[in-house]
Image 1 (spheres, one colour):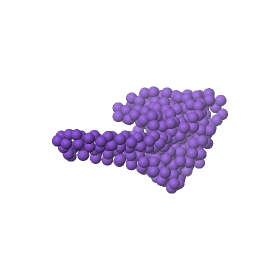
Image 2 (cartoon, rainbow, N blue to C red):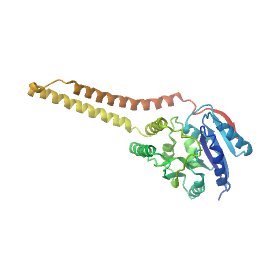
Image 3 (spheres, helix red, strand yellow):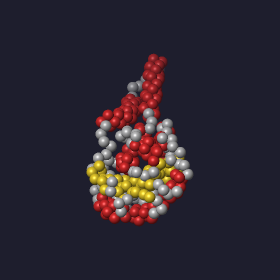
Image 4 (cartoon, one colour):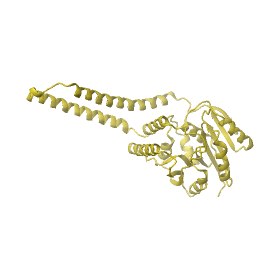
Length: 309
């Protein structure tokens, strides 16, 4: 039953204090399996690389890929999928908010036929109110806009069958939103529920600005509905403007004594129309930027160093 190779891919960015606690728990869980652990160092500035190398010297099954600079979490996962050799590939973060103890349950569901096994957050008391609400809003918005249903309350802690990993490797797009790409393949799916824990050490590397960029990438990668909504806004505003012109002309000729030219209406109209135009230009700009990235066709990441690979 356990005659397979299990790959664990772990993106890391300035996680020097989390490496040892993570491996202490993870290695105990992996004892019944044949396994490899691949750390992807996404341009860390602290001693993360040195901590991983110490562990890799003691155990050749612990491996390291170091980027030349920070390319982002999704690119780190992409590199992990490219180098992983396992029949099943688990991606997880190094901060221990995603507990390794549910891995046997994930493997069990995979062996029963699921090609994708998501680790779904059952509770997330450790997150503040703002993060909980923005996360819920994001998933509702993207599922409203996207034609591909994306599971809510799941991040990048999941197990993928080799078939799904090979499918992802053949997708060459540069703006990669892996949560959407994994769901887009429509493979048989199952879930394992867990309670989200506190970080083992350090602080989150996902501030609001990165969360916002991530959300924009996800929405524009899986839907053209924002462009259609911008078109609908344009028609709606144009219609209102046309009706307003007719109303103004009629009132001027029927009740000329009541007609007063005021700056308030003009100011509000200009601000409203200007806001709609800027939003529309911004939406178009997001899609044009994606086209620009694809046309450049630059490498998705640059590897500086590999250990035990």
